[in-house]
Image (cartoon, rainbow, N blue to C red; front, side):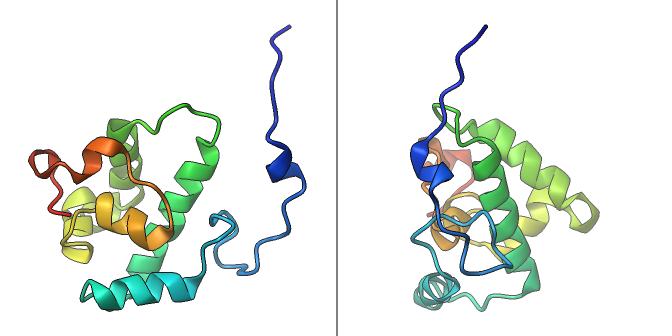
Amino acid sequence: MLHVSTDINRLIREPATDPDFPQAPLEWTRDDAMKIAREEGLELTADHWEAIRALQSYYAQHADDTIINLRDLHDALDEHFHQKGGLKYLYTLFPGGPIAQSCRLAGLKAPFIASDPSFGSVA
């Protein structure tokens, strides 16, 4: 039988303080995201918050992965926002790159290549 390890911090974690963001990192707050958005010249809309929730959910589902696969993350966001235009739509929301900029707002560490301008990010 394969041994599955569990992070003790996840087991003893306090419930999220913001019910709208149940999978947010422990140290993240909505105010943090709004502060970063102001610094980057963004006004957060409902779609921005939806993207932040989608990212936090993806990261929570892949918490046991050694690294976050950028292509899989792109595909997941593209699928989540398919009805609105997928990644093309996300570029209108996050001109600094749908992965790099939205990860900063979501309190997550972007995959290392996400900030490479040749990979579709200007952050």
